[in-house]
Amino acid sequence: LAAAVAVMSAAVGPAGSPLARLGAGSSDPASPAGNEGRYQLAGLDVFPCSQCGVTFMVNLSTDSGASWQTLPLSCDPNTARAWMTSSISSSGQYMALACGDGTFYYSSTFGANWTPSNPPVSPLGYAALSGSGQFVLVAGLFNNQVVLSSDFGVTWQTIQAFSGLGGMSINSMSLSDSGQHMAVCGLNGQASLLYVSSDFGTSWTAIGNLPNDGLYTVAVSADGRVQATSTTFTNGILVSTDYGVTWTSNPVGGATNLGALAISGTGQFQITGTLQGTAVALFRSDDYGQTWAAQPNTTCLVGGLGVS
Image 1 (cartoon, rainbow, N blue to C red):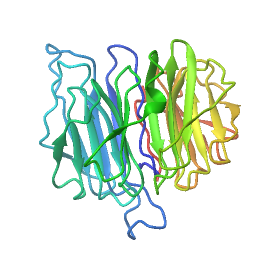
Image 2: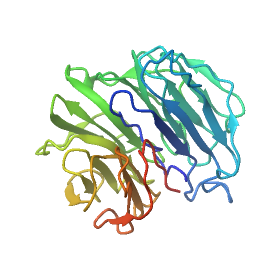
Image 3: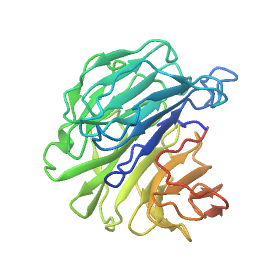
Image 4: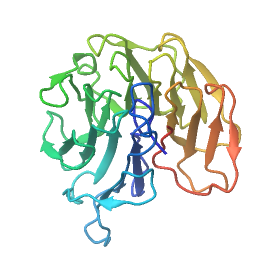
């Protein structure tokens, strides 16, 4: 498993549901040889539960998931949520973790060392890296706060395009390898919202005429040409193959309550999963999200996905 350019799922689950947030380093032409899927992150995310007896740990694999080590990082389980999202650059050198207690952890050493910081959003919800690791998007939990760093998480600037959307709740963010192309999806009440940028986050365009599909996870290919977002209410995938200019809705037959979504670096291979423990929880596309096939014997509640 690996996250292609814009990392793993950054989705919001139903109240009380433990969701594994999964990310991994992906492969693209700039990745060191042999790094495809080598680096992976997984953390536990639940709502506040001091009596659950759950260890709120986050684990790192540097050998393609063969073995895992628990990172010595602190996340207060009595805050809005525990480990929210993880994100990894294409090479695996840069990694980001968002904790619901407001702490943002960043590593530039392949996960060997981590530096905590506090981006100006509260409560902290989501983090997404560009494939290069230079550009970092961070958003608040259940609100419209979005900030951007263009210097590897050192300084932050507020994205004003979202400031006027008082009722917006960010669900997911994704960036291309260079950081030129970005996408953010969420909800404003029951209305779906989708914003894209093609100039490194300087300006943003709202995608209009969206059905009230409950946009859950957005993913961007390495070059930004292919973009996709899952729809919870209508169980389909919205796909763009022209850098987010136009979008087509493609049904995922047999799916119920779609959530997590991940695409490969080229965007050709895509996988999505359900938020319910159904008999078939995973669905795969090999044609840029145009058609989908159920993956048998995949009974689980899918919280995060990645594709190398």
